[in-house]
Length: 279
Image (tube, rainbow, N blue to C red; front, side):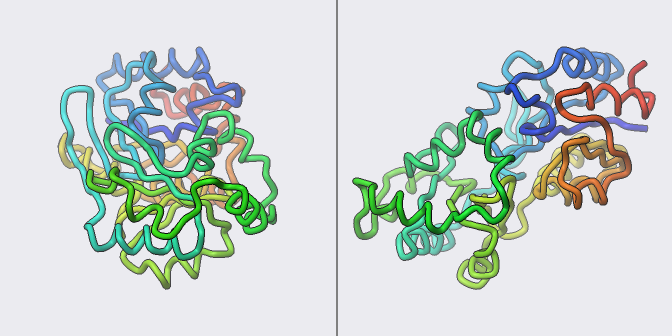
């Protein structure tokens, strides 16, 4: 019996126009009427989640790829970077001239380029960028043009005095092994081909989901999740029911129990009807 449902946001709960389909809102309400908890598991920050989904009426929020878990009434879990690990990340960004953002509970700050990259419009467009897009070349051009390029730029930012739950850095997929070598105390999650979300090692959407479920006394086998991208694979594999959207990456679909229709064509409502959660 399903007792909790978690949705990824971009490419899943949101249609390509950046809105939640009416069929999805109706399906969520019907599931909640059956005393099923409904929320999100996302790489996004709390402020952006509220901006995008403020009118949906969700029960729980797993944000920053599992690093910050809360309900409208309480914070359940908050795992920020240890100071020495965050120092390693900022040093890497400065040394390699990488644009990077830092995420706190109430703000995301850092590179203007990366703040643009985190916008809803760019996130939707990013899904159409070829995997072999010349990210390194683009980064080099942006750094040359950037007015803020200077030694130790990021290490001197005052935001680093606050708890940082996730860093979002411009980095192509080809750099993954380099990141793992130079930042061994970090975990890496991707929802597009040109940037990476960096969290404390062991952090993931699945971990955040498990924390919420334990708080409510719900087994992982009683959870259902929806996703479409690489950073959704672990939760799709781990949950009792893992659903991939019709627009999902091929490897994401291969890990799912069920592949529904796309985020633009009532995929969420279809899957909930398929599993008899709604009629």
